[in-house]
Length: 348
Image (cartoon, rainbow, N blue to C red; front, side, top):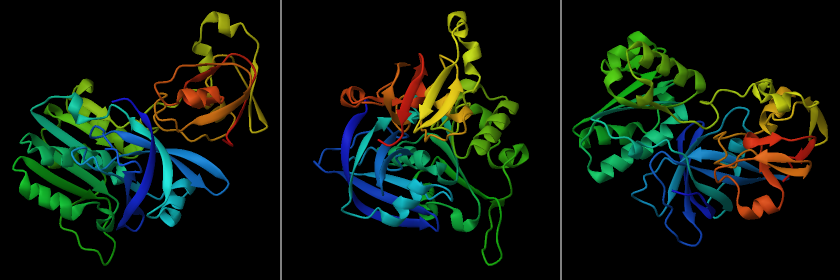
């Protein structure tokens, strides 16, 4: 499903936990917001003095396309998500783009699934589970959600109701700690091979979808491999955390013709970074200690959009920019390789 430009209006918000809010959006023109379960949208957030692009997975089901719901945690150092929690209220309109991504159960047919999430990584899993519930699917599913404490468990009541409704669904919840004053009778502790074997002894035979913090996904992937699971049956949500960081020295793997070229300079908002031709803008920025927001890192979401002020790049994106944006000089840092000295600005 090709991404398209959207204009969304916030029509509701729900407090889920102390640091998680679900935002409800409707298309301002009343068009259905079609997507696949597990896909994401990119929002242009109008922060004071700047517009920043951030990508979030849709938590709602595509069987109810009149709205999309985004369940978002306000990260301690995340000024964009913090702004959303503090300032994004009903009647505010924002630009968006989507849907994007191939992290969806619709692309895979299997007799048994495992939907494994850590923290707010539950969003795509809820979209998939809600979709299957609305369709009356009877496939074998284990839904595993890990949270920090009982107070951080998301959608507990809805999951309990779906557990009762869907005969072949089993919901398992794990918390890392139980603070004084909170009660808990389920699994507790950090996820490891022994713990996961108790909760899901047949992990290796299931088609696995996993989303959460990078360390959490890496741990589950190692356990899946150790249990004999095949890599092609293990899928992770790939917005930023799941992809290996590009090496600042990636130019050393480029063809010899590029290696023979002299060094080049990337200038970001007036700050110069020495690098090599063929390096992506994103990798060069990281090597220079500049943090650029990223999402899919595949040229789809548009989160890493910057504006080119000078120089030439070779860019191959997958729909993350519109033709108008390209004419206006925007590029995507993740998939734009330097052909020489380049100057960009993040003040778009």
